[in-house]
Figure 1 (cartoon, one colour):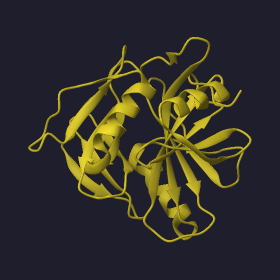
Figure 2: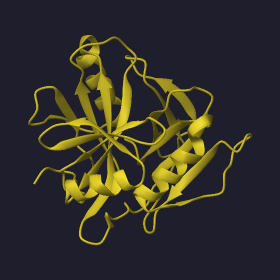
Figure 3: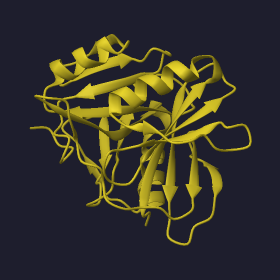
Length: 226
């Protein structure tokens, strides 16, 4: 069983400053001092609770997201899922889950990592993540999605979404839960994001560096739809 889940935003060097400025503003966090041999890592520090979002400057031109799974007594290791998604096993971490952020009339929180899985490997990938996390694999209201049931206190949910088409590797994006999606989207637009599509309960956005993510109607405290 994992003790804590962190998400890394992997930001290309060319859009590092824009990406960091955007995500600190969106999440109402402050940026820690950089660390690493090339000052390539930093943490988004929330106003309360234990940090669970971090940023990494990468050499690739394409932004992305990866997971760090923190285990009691664990050591650092880089792993790859059957579908080619790279993630990290990491040293122990944990604490209290940060509360949703009040934006003066509505609240929001980055609370989910969605794994976007090619159709051919969907069942294998779902089984892998259930075994790796020790979390229960459960259906959702959408036939193309399953979820890992988040234990109490964990900061991030993990959603497993089957793409309509495409080949490996598996990719990932962040989801925010918001009590007022329209107001939250407007806030993101003012910070430099763009709308890139969506559906009845979610809006797909693109940050100033080109990274896709979603704003959803889910409750930021429970993670569930109203």
